[in-house]
Length: 286
Length: 279
Image (tube, rainbow over all chains, first blue to last red; front, side, top):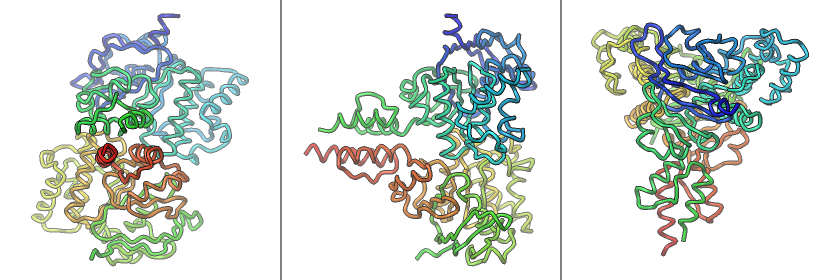
């Protein structure tokens, strides 16, 4: 179990080429993620984040039909050797557009659809339904029609339908890009809970630097199909070269520290949250 | 004396005659203002923008765009006064080449060929995409595709440009490209209305901010002042940019007062405050 915990996800020299493409979308990626880590993928559009996400549940290569070189292992399974249906029980994938993921007439049926298709019996289904809705704070909306929900509620519903499969890993590809501030907060809050309270390993592609800096364990920076940065939020956001190369915006407080630094005022360390910056600034005051 | 170019007079809007989406909205926007419109989804932002362009007509009250009553004008007549850029450029792009995309509007206004060409040239130059004239628009990067739409709106030469969440799904570089283009258009005299969730953009680019909630105007004033009304913004789950939150927290702890809404502004105010307290 130990090596599985250290390598809940592992990419070994992975390259991926979509059919008919003349260049690789991912080039020679090797990375491991331990169980329970909250990892964020950052980088410009087209850098390889979505390709990476879809390798985790087998959509790449099984559904897209491209060429996979190297080995992707999730929760001990080699994705080349297992179907998407099997991998979906270990890895849940949530996409950017809530509308594109919901297709049934009620919140209830949306959540149980996947589990039902696994032949899981009624009692267990009811249990999974309750727990999944509770985890995303939608218990009160069980009989609603999905189209009547707000963006944030829809996205939480998409998450619930995926976690009802009881996966160990949750992958989210830009889950809040289409949401308003309230929806954003709701969804990020649910993701944090799923990680901290339920122990899910999280892989999330996102741009929202302030939230990322505050809550995630590790950032993988993508540029042109490669990983050019791998570290804590502090390490990554302090690295101007990587930020520029990957077109990533640092949190405002980090930018402020950099601005002050250029004008001769150095903070003790690199702040990535409001609290840290406040502390450093108060230290500077005579 | 800046002239009003948009006059929204006590409008209501009901969907299907029953669902109230806008209530008693009165807003006057003068020429060359750059205004942000913020609010949660469902607050009425998009409904208001559609009313501005005459795509919807108010159920009560009226809207004058450059003196023209939207209820009495056709959408095509209003399109030359106010242009709309949506959040997903791919939903507006349809032509085989960038040139054809941009030429479409003026061609439909039946301008002579030389005038169409002139407008296409100028629009591409203004946004910086001349090198893509013959390119297939969907092959361009996301940021460039957004610029193509902005250029095609510009070719109609509207005095007002309305952008609905233009930086959604853009990476940092794309965001900056789009907003710098918008800023340039503003500098050159256009009136800009920007609907966005991105508070950092609101702070950096707009002089005035209007907050909608439940179809009504919650706040309307200089951006600086609006972003400072934390309690009211909180009622609609809007947080000011991180830099403003930091400034407000520092104010409480040091008994100082900060006006800053951007990184550079707060940087300068902190430097000034540190210098002042060491003397």
